Length: 217
Length: 217
Image (tube, rainbow over all chains, first blue to last red):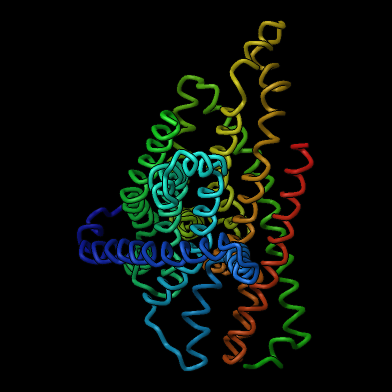
């Protein structure tokens, strides 16, 4: 029924696609962490106009589809004469989208440490920096790591939008190899396994961390 | 910027028709994935032998795969294996298969968040296990599940745009038809479609926040 030799014939294509998916995810993670931190700082700044900008960013990008955000870079900007490669467009689209979710996770984490903790630390003689370093951040960190991990899993899955703009990722490879060979179900099934190789250990790791961190609170 | 073709009556009518398809597909998938998600979540929570392990397997595989891949498989993969689904059904099926795994996790953690003492108290009163689950645990869990469920539904509304790859005639698809003809309308059209998605999803998230406050009080 399935011609498995196809998988061996296209070995190099699969490896390339896998590496594109991995590098797009890692690059977008770095970029969206930077965007997310910046936006979270805006939202917690206590300066009203900055807070509004931060909130507008988060609400707009997490309530609109990632396809549109990627399309804006890939086919929107070229109509203005600004042209990025498919890969760059994909990474930028992924980053502005994920940045909104990361900002939200960071803000929620820092805000959920009770205010009394800071006051208590300060009144027992710690400086602001010491209180942050030894009291607030370790607690915020525990609350923030699991949602950040989940965002990374989502990022890997969402990187498949590169396929729509011919970004050369794993799903794009599946699309090309399957239309070359007509082994559609086999190729998509195999590529599904390759995605699981990345995402499954990550999300099991996040689950494990979540359980561990919640125990010794 | 070609605003003339972006806001032409014919374009707006076509976008509205696409929006109806988007909402129809999203609503069907929301109802179906809510039903399957609750069943899967309860199976996992109650730890029924074999059944709960199958539920775990399903949940872990599906939520760690890209939705786009599932949509591709549900349409092109199944067609390759001799099962030809109409585009609308393939889109609803793909969205449901993916989202019910995520909803099952929300259901499980909602059920887990109800204190164990509640079960013991109900059992001591003479409730059977099923009665306890139905009358005591589920109502309390559902209340806590509302915010994550609504954000999952928001994600689903956005995700319908991925079905553009199998030419589902939803709003993105209809926008594409226009800007493929009038290239300079690409950016305004993408922004208009983004704004429509934003309006729907932002309203949904406000309703959820309102519900959360009312139920908490």
